[in-house]
Image (tube, helix red, strand yellow):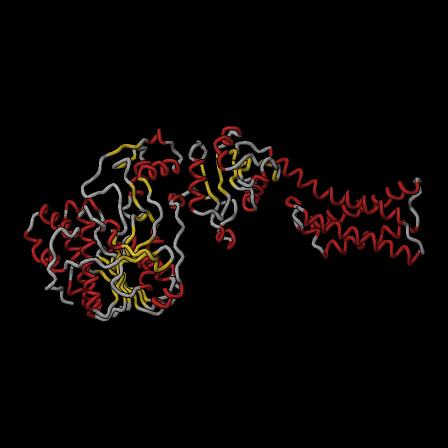
Length: 608
């Protein structure tokens, strides 16, 4: 129906209502069928004209009545009241009398019939929607404003395949109340019972302000059921209109870390990056590419994307150019191997970066156990090449990405990273460049992370393989790890090892169980097998040794490690002789040296 047709229909309906209401009022008040009198006709015409004028002014004929609520009722109240008041004024002016009882009954009938006729359409539509079958019975966790919005959207959206049947809320005042006709049936602890009692198929967590720990606690209760669990989008996404309140997302493993992300000092990072030349090594990797994405938010003058793999460098270059096409940032791809000392010196000399983020490294523990010489070449010699080139060419800040596996290392990868930390701390003592390392735990979603492996195993129907039932790890997301790197660069004084307070470690077996549950499967369907600890692995990781710990935080959730003894002579000896050693000898020397099982001799140092 077009707007003109709709307007004509409403004008006709309202005319009939007004005439009928005033004549019925006259009959009820006077008790006679002789209702066609001059005062009555006058009142009828005045009310009708006022009604049409005010209805157009208040956009009454533009309302979508299937969504009518209190606002539309108030509009009708204003229109009817003012129309009756004008009729009374005209009665006084023309017939010198006001028929109060007649006007009161007319007002009552107009409100009832005009308002009722409008709201009947909404009631009819709502009752029809409630009859739609094949909708999944849904439990909404959170009976606040967000949960109420979700319920209203689901009730009124014909296309939605979810039907809200119950609320869960920890506010005891809401317990046993009905909201939009939906009962509040208990608290978080009652989720399992509610799912059984109400035959729930879907659970929607509708509390955008939840902390990670609270999301984790709720999900653990939901995981006791067979219902699929989803979560409301972030509050800022709802407020900015990126997503609607009915666009739920699946709970991600990142939601279950149980630790809130570190808030950054945006001003200090901006001062460090904005309008500066930034170089990222390993720019095509999981961490390196995310560092590049985070750096672009602070508008550097140029971003040098250095990496060994041409495909990954090409991909991140194209992505950054597309997402930053309106900015003036210059993106420069450089294909280079950090093991090439001359090329590193040439790159630093040509581009003259202000800050270097060194993310290039071999990170896979079992692979480095099998190829320890490659850990020496890439993680130790490569780091030394980049660091010396940065120092020689006057780079202001050099930030190296390290790992919790560098603490009391039992693996070649961890040992190589520990020795790389010693190298940059040593060069820091002889250079005007500020050298720092950032040490954190496992990164969710990176190519070497256990998460992608678990997901592939689940997709294939299982089983999920876990090395040991007691193995625990610290976890963080790729964006958070990358932001920490930027913050470290801003805090750098020179020689520090920055460590994030990563909260409580996570059992790998619990992580596997959560991923299975998040995939919509049961643990019995997929299964979990224990494969045994791999070479170089530990049951748990540490972020700082006891003699490295500074108790005071240098920034909320960020600690700084003390400088340990630097075994520079021994590192230089390994660099010069590893090519003549066997794999087992390289492996043993690296691990012994990183754990200080060789007496240091500090007379010789690495030239800068």
